[in-house]
Length: 284
Image (cartoon, rainbow, N blue to C red; front, side):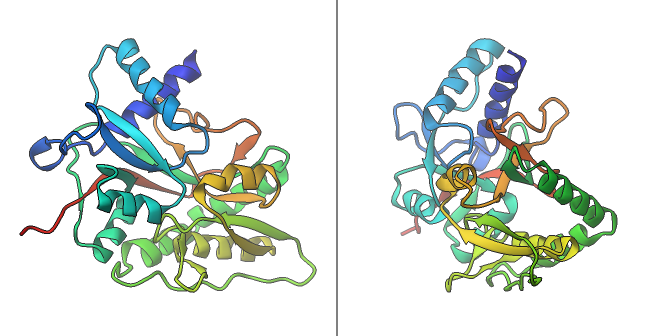
């Protein structure tokens, strides 16, 4: 019961973040009283049970929360196209991703926050029999936090990056006769998880992986997949690590509350705030 309540709180916080437009007003309702909210497909939830979560939240907590209908997409391009064509009203993404998107398309707009703030923490997801690899990743992540490497990479690839340009390419390490770790990359969170037009992964997460590979003396191979195929790629052993897994971070929300069965999580290496975005048609 405690875990169910925790999941309900997560969904409430996610859907209450960034729900207001200018002066706290929501976009025009287009779907029977609900705002259609585009989201990248989640590892451990469906559109249907998100809707049920919302109902249970209102019943359990006796509160009224923003009314959204989650609409899942397997990649960022299709979600952006749906927003621009009016098939959905808003999209849910991260503040740094929103900054990148705004630089590419000025018709996007971040909605002003007027409710609870929600922050996701980025980590790696592995099969539950890969505890040794998980522990090795945790050791390196801890070292990179302590010696300032993660702060340096964050500054270089996120804080100070010119969002009008694509993230720079990153050379991945190679060690003869050493194990290769296959990591899924989706390209759906630029400038974090990014794939260039010529199909080469780049950006912050790739830079983090390159540093991890060098410190572990392991080869890193990136495998491009759709976000919706992450869990299947992991469980089928197509990849060893899901490159873009997230865990909620809060004093009242356990770090493993959104973890699917059979999967273990590394320690987090970055966190960012969730925001909602709309597409504004050009004024005539």
